[in-house]
Length: 129
Ligand code: HEC
Image (tube, rainbow, N blue to C red):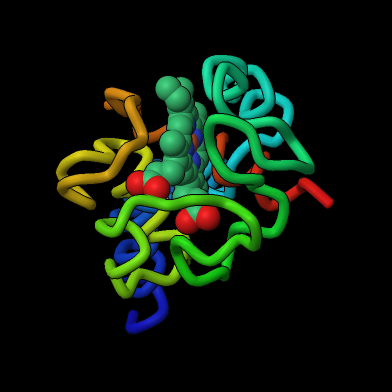
């Protein structure tokens, strides 16, 4: 009898397990899609050249770096003194809205409201060597 009750309980849980299983691919996407990120990086190229400083600083190796510290680039005082280290969370907030994250930054970019796009760009930045 006990066994039957367990089977019944599992049958009740099964519909819950399906949405949970469907949710996991979305979680995998949270890691970001490098190819999509490269496309989303296109507007950034107006200012950021990969591998060297331009209007904006070189972004190779930016993940994990302290903000405003790439050699030879003239940062705003706001970014230099922000105390930020570019971990995923900070990069995410920055790319969603640079001016809110660091008031006074000279990065003239409105930001991407779309979280997926931001996550993809971050994956692309991390792939740069
Ligand atoms: C209109 C020019 C422009 C565009 C477009 C632009 N940036 Fe920037 N970016 C800058 C400038 C200028 C800085 C330096 C900001 C400062 O010193 O306040 C900067 C700084 C950064 C930093 C911090 C670097 C560091 O060394 O601390 C990151 C990360 C960054 N940009 C990523 C991006 C990404 C990703 C995009 C596209 C989604 C983008 N930027 C679009 C001009 C731009």
